[in-house]
Length: 275
Image (cartoon, rainbow, N blue to C red; front, top):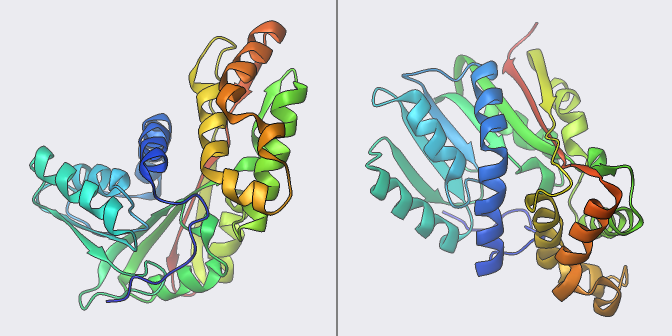
């Protein structure tokens, strides 16, 4: 097995793993909704790509039940250690984790479905990844992709600080080789990979001006992306002011009575073979 793979621009330190926990909790309901709509059912054998700390794999393990099985693949050993511990704590014996490159790994046994959440965001050639894993499905298998469209993230009314930070983040993601608006193109990616019966939709949250999760989300992503932003000359650490950023964003939202719309959680799915 190889632990090589696409660069994860946000890193994998303690702060990033905690941010992933918070993010997973925030988009968990949307993820479950999209996976149900895609066709994940009890009894399926499912591959979870870029499983990280295992949030989606554990959700899938519950959805497919004891008659099904889940394999989670990721290149980060630290994240997989967390995933294995969580599976053990939850008593889920129908899920296992493999350290490997999630974009190219292949099992000896075919899957009923392959799922990715926020992997294509960091993948240079998403069409190739989808095509590769679609070839590892049973006949009439399912590919389900869930990713962010960061282009939809904003406050209403717009505030100068949030607008500025959003610009820094999008530029930082692109400089690091990620595609922050890949969610908008998921359906096109699946069609380009040769899938048929492609469908999907997006889910948007609306956070109240006094909801602390909005400022915490923006500041958390900024913290993880800070080395890339500063190294690229997009903004300086002094301009960003990370230590006070969350508080300043919260104050701006409250003072303008602004609603925060996080990145849209987009799902798209399809099946291999001719239409």
